[in-house]
Image (cartoon, rainbow, N blue to C red; front, side, top):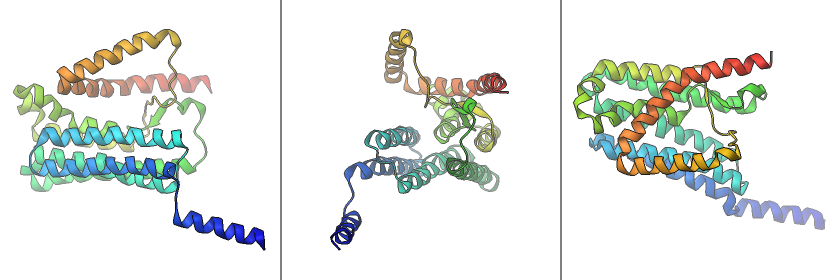
Length: 259
């Protein structure tokens, strides 16, 4: 009877309280969700800089919540579901509305269709990602790759013309055109739902001999972000887009080693 009473007491404690390490990652995820929803508000009021900054802030929190969960050993199924919902709003809905308000608003029917395409593509990508977590482990050659373009990268690619226009307003007539933005949304939507391998840094290991050069690169990046933020972020996004075909080539080489 004593053992039964102890078990009942433990179950009651679990229902009435949770350790902070289980809650902390969810708090970070909620901050990401708040940033994404706030971006929608700034998009509606045509405050483009703030809208873009909020999506990048959501990406920062999105990268942080998983690390907090692993560090505190506070991963939960609830947290994983909340993270997916936050990603959908912050990287699927917010960038689509931002590009619609910035460029496609005067094409009410067709412009909104392309924004819906972006959101649907994000929903499908996240649904596939969640099902893959429960499926059999991927072959070893997938360790350094994502399946398709990840959610934050897709959001950055979607915002690329807006960032370019901040530093190069003379190019606005090109990057803000309906044809360019609609084509961009189609391409990004396809990249999200495709099975194209893209580089992942989650399991990347840095050789000790490269530590100092890496620190120097980080310092240079920080200085450029402070002095030329939009130019730097725009160049980074373009470099990521160019890395996709390189990633496919490297993936095919890695795959051949295991055949």
